[in-house]
Image (cartoon, rainbow, N blue to C red; front, side, top):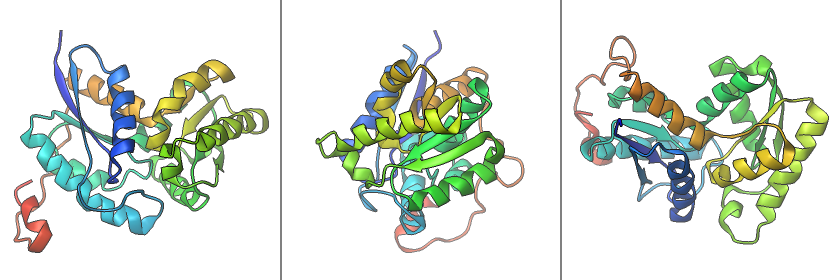
Length: 247
């Protein structure tokens, strides 16, 4: 049995959301795979815009550095904006996958068109940018927001989860989509139940990314160090960035 260590990084500072993400990752990991879950100690408690993503990206890079030191062979960036993904790939030797990227890829393997259900309306624009960047724009039928902040998924009321369910049902009925992508790492624990209830694939990016990284590791594939994903050029960094020198 192959044994792997995969780091799952929650780019925000919410310990509760990190645990939700870690639980979902461990539920699908193969018996020989260890999940190393982490989040930054400084940054933003939720990621809901470009400003938040810029701050979170630095935390992601620091977590990749720490994960490598702890033996992580691959990395998952567990925020649907995939903050800092390409920069993280420069630092990482092993495969590094963002959950939006993973979920979109998986959706195209099981359906010709998919819908996305996410949190705040402003994040729909970020999702559209990623669809275009990853080449999935023509596969996405529509995007929906529950119009609640990310941390509502962890407030214990169940309101956010109910709104996710309602939006998924709406998307299935109105968009003529064969699959639904959940657009937030905090929704990771909802996918299986919704898949069973709706009768179509409801895809969570955390679990999708874990299985992708496992597959790449099993194939002996890491991040290419030729071209733009080569290790960062060595140069002095100052202040809080100094610890990142040397990748």
